[in-house]
Length: 323
Image (cartoon, rainbow, N blue to C red; front, side, top):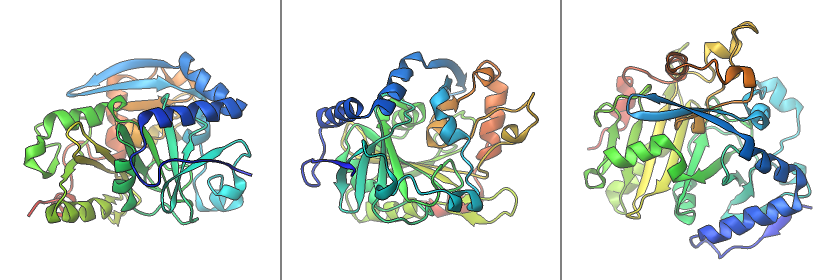
């Protein structure tokens, strides 16, 4: 039976409570404890790309996610590891919103890493409206969404993740360059940024305009490079509150799930499958041989293969245009 942790009902969860949750979970779950201990051996190499201070991180424990088979047949053939009935007995859960549970991620990328799971088994189809509510409950954390074709290793079960917001270079850059008084949405081009891919930064104000912006964010979409069709599953989204208490949102529209490098012959292959944290500036590789192979040029190529390197398509910029 899955363990349960209690928190104040739907108020903000203090950071100390989150830290205690992690400590309690690791004490009770040896496998997770080993994976968190392994973070101390993680190697990281800075690769600045224009205004974005990116890095490549070697994290062998992430092979389960990076190498996950996410085709329809493979997903249907395995039990859903996010459903409560299939989780390890040692895994705790805490209710973070009426239909959402907070879990310590047993395969962490960063020292504070949570998975936030819908109680309903439904597909990872589009950015859920509850992201804003959950981000308000988790001050200091960035809550993020990997679309089913944008890094999700469990595309069959709606879920979010959360890490400390100040750990993510792209979010720090957006906070620095998007003046809160400007409100609304601004593209990375409008912000005058030299970045390896284009994104949309938004500020959700506590008024009617903010509600309109929130609805635009949850209706975000990417555009499939092969078909040219809109797809809400080709999106990475981040919600967090800044030091002023304003709700921030950042959307990365995608054009592909994995870059060509992922499918190359063994001697040229790079096992890198970008999800939200990769797009936020920390590119993960689980294989040691790939770690030194990633150059600034290769990192730009990977970003440009899965997102929009030069400019966002007009239909995306029109969607986020502030009236």
